[in-house]
Image 1: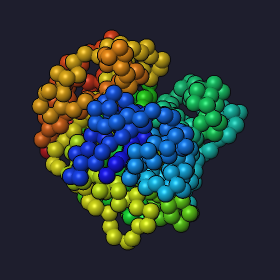
Image 2: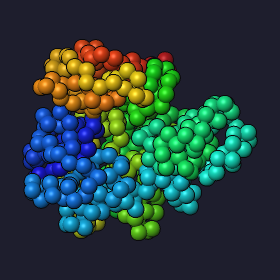
Image 3: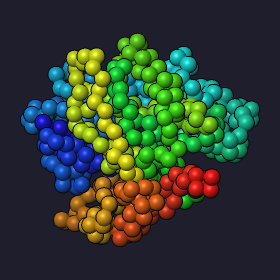
Image 4: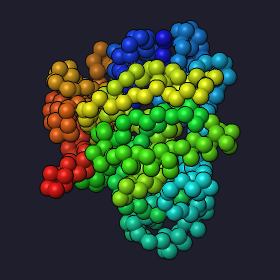
Length: 433
């Protein structure tokens, strides 16, 4: 099987790594790829938003399955164009991807179908937003309606922070048209979790749960980012919670989309807040999360390529999708970022210690924002590398990931040193009990 992965980040490198290990040893291609993806298979040039370019690559390389990583090509309709040309695609249509492309669409769907989520109000005028900040209770959440690279949800703790959020989203338009409409949303208490469901219409199978850490600095301080690390599986996940998430979130969402003429094929990501085993949806995404994927895939047990192949079947039957379980271990992903991230960063600094890190037991390194310059590996973005440690339990995985992260160097490199602190706290509570 020939598989083409669309994207150029750590998520796509992790997908390529996992798919290349499948029993059938598929040939992996990526577009536009990165230096890490080039280690797994051929990297193809081109703009992933140009459906004609992607389709030409599919035909030239005789691609059997296209796996679309990022949300922007999905919301732009890349899956639609490829499917119309007879290509087998793992990734939702633009109509189904509206679940991530518009938070207002998602909130309306949840409200109409009784899917648990926070109370909210949609605001389209700056004047109304400025009135709202005088009326709401704090803390509160203000969200851009459209895509904002994972940075469009702002937790505000007082009127001053709320006013800055409105100026950033609706006036300065930091995220462009994404901030023309905003959602004022009730702040939820509890523990955040990410649930991945590989879906094909109303059929689905759950992957291992994960938890990501969005803030740039230790102690969940600093600016919101695309994600500074993650771990999997979540310590506090349990069978009762799994049943509730399936019955109250995943199944009604897939049913609602199907009945609205928007059947979902791809990875349905439910970002949840869980309090006393009760899940509420913070957001939906229409693709594998980043950096959660880098923690989830190393501890899967089963054939990921077969699962994605069957989910993408254009003529699905009623048979359930294959189960891909968890192998009993834990993985922690730590993002090594460039100075200044999530703001402006300087690029082109040589990266040292990569092979030394990879040689350590239980360590993996996925490329996120890297490039080559005169034959040397250099920094090429804000989130540069995703270091993963795999161990028999969370403490072992943490030791391994931070040992590996400590030997990687480049000018301005930084990373959080407390990823998975909620999991460690939960383990401590069990020990105390």
